[in-house]
Length: 87
Image (cartoon, rainbow, N blue to C red; front, side, top):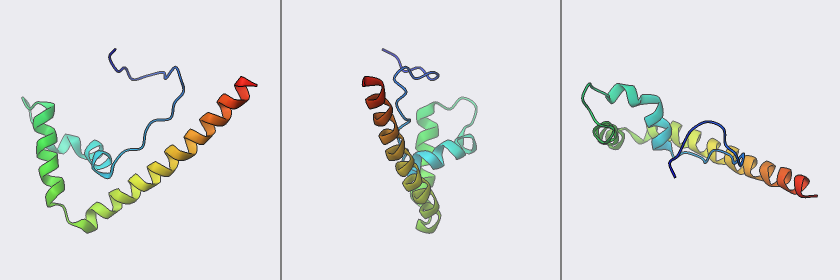
């Protein structure tokens, strides 16, 4: 079964993202060059991430922590809705 974006039948919350993936999603276009595969783009971005100062990574780590809190909150809300629907 292939993954399709769009309507989520189970209304599950979107999982939290790591600091690297948050940064990568915002900066992906900076690494893409015509003819590059997604693997090439990811490797270039990974190399840049590893060279990035910890002080710069810290803001992405905070965004990731915030996203984890959002995910936990949405999971609780989803379970509450399921419980209400089951009653």
